[in-house]
Amino acid sequence: MVLLIRATLVQAFNIPSASMQPTLLIGDFILVNKLVYRVSEPRKGDIVVFKYPVNPSLDYIKRIIAGPGDTVEFVEFRDEKAGIKVYKVLVNGREYRLRYVGLRNFSGRFYYEFEETVPVNGKEIRHRVWFSAYPVKVAGMDSGSGVECLEEKDGLCTKFVVPAGSYFVMGDNRDNSEDSRFWGFVPRENIVGKAFVIYFSGEVPPLTPKDVNFLTGFRQLFLALLHPRPERIGRFIIY
Image (cartoon, rainbow, N blue to C red; front, top):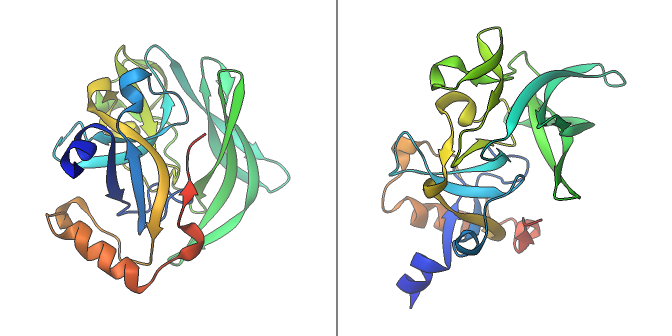
């Protein structure tokens, strides 16, 4: 029964890196709905687990920013009140609005936290994103990723169209995420499912892809049990 459920309905994953902070923290243990995309298509704003296109043996988790046929554009954004310059995303000419929230400290590095608003089917999805307080701003796709570029700036493709059958994904920790900006689009068949709840959470060390093996998940869960974060347990991440 467990194998059947894991193969068709729900699968558990743990968050190994800071790429989805502040939405998902290192040491969050999540459940992913594998059935939902059998009956519907992924949509903008969804947090999805997928097979990493460069190495399908690895599972990645990011947020869908745009889908097949969408035109994506990166534009400079300056919050005049806070005196902060970052960038925002436009999809098919509609902006993902940014509202400054505050300065955050993570492991000795500072990040500007914004609330980002994603318009989806007449509704608005709001979530938090981080930008480095240092001059690291990756506002566009690496031209070496094979994207057909419509506009380019400083060696980055700042306007492009998502190919048919593919998705453009980004981490919520915008300056600390290896995502579509660097290696390209996610094919539809690579998407495993949609994250929907944090079933457990605890303080654990971060991991890199090289650290992942059969026992990694058990070790991380054991460490999380020793240092739990009760306030995050049972938190839903669906919209």
